[in-house]
Each structure stands twice: as structure tokens, then as C-alpha cells.
Length: 110
Image (cartoon, rainbow, N blue to C red; front, side, top):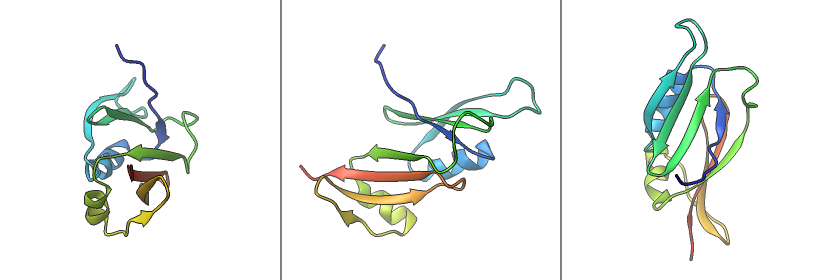
């Protein structure tokens, strides 16, 4: 088993959030609810990167910032119609998911 950190992002509607993350290349892995009417907890993954999306109050705060390092930030920028910015360490964009969580996404400039 590899050790890893998996950010948990607070979302209002896990299904809608998972669909938005699909545009970033993530795929829904699983969903859990203690009962059908209770909040959902979902995992999405893109390669070796995983995120948990939680409808549970108290699991995470809105307006969280997560940094994603990717191979081709240009493709994601094109998908979302945003311009890539140059930073000393990477070419980056910043997006907000439907719940206001911020995603800073970059390709290192090695």
C-alpha cells in the first residue's frame, strides 16, 4: 500500500460535483450513504490522484484550496475556457467547482 493524502471537499450535491470533476478527467469510483436519504460520500480519481466529495456537514469547509499537479494544464484550460498563467514553478490555472472549492492546477516548468 502506498501512503497518500486524500483531500475531502465539501459539496452540496455529490452527483453534480462528480459530474463537474469528470470534466477535469476524474472518474467516480464509489459512493456511500448510511441510508438512502442521508448525505453522500463519493470518491473520484484521476490516475493516482483521488479526492473525496462529501455532503456531510462538518467534513470540510467551503472555499477549500487544493493544488493539482498535472501533465497538461493546457488541455484543462481549454476545456474550461481559461487562460494559463506563468508562475516561477509552473504554468497554472485556478478553477472553482460548483460549491466554491478552489482548484489550482499546474504543470511544472522544469
